Length: 136
Image 1 (cartoon, rainbow, N blue to C red):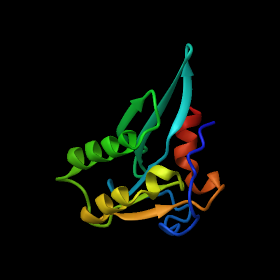
Image 2: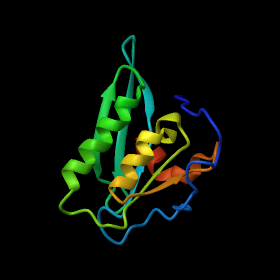
Image 3: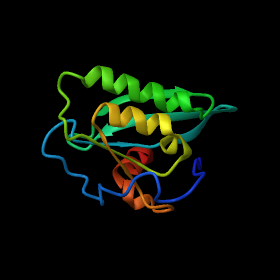
C-alpha cells in the first residue's frame, strides 16, 4: 500500500537490472523496497535488501515512520556486514521512491562502487522478486 514516489522519473538511475533476477554469485545483485503493514493499530515500515543469488535478506530495518534513516541504516548495515565478501560489480535495484532518489543515497552507493538501478515508474514487475518477498 505504501507509495513513496516523489520527484522526476528516470533521472536518478536507469533500469540496469531489466528483470534479470538471477545472479551467478552472492553480492552481485541486490534488490530493495519499502513495504507498509499494520500490527494492531500501528503502521510499520519494513525496508530489506534481498540478494538475487539465494534470496537471502542481507539486512533490514523496521520503523514506525518511513524516514530516510529507515533506508540509510539498512544500507549501512548491509555494507558493514558484507564488506569482506562483496564483489566490486554489485548493483542495487529499487523503485523510484524518494528515499532512493536522495543525493545522500546515491553518494553512498558511488562511494562503495555500487551501481544504482531503478525500476520504471509504476512498474512493479521490474522489482518482482522483492515484491514477491513482500507477498509471502
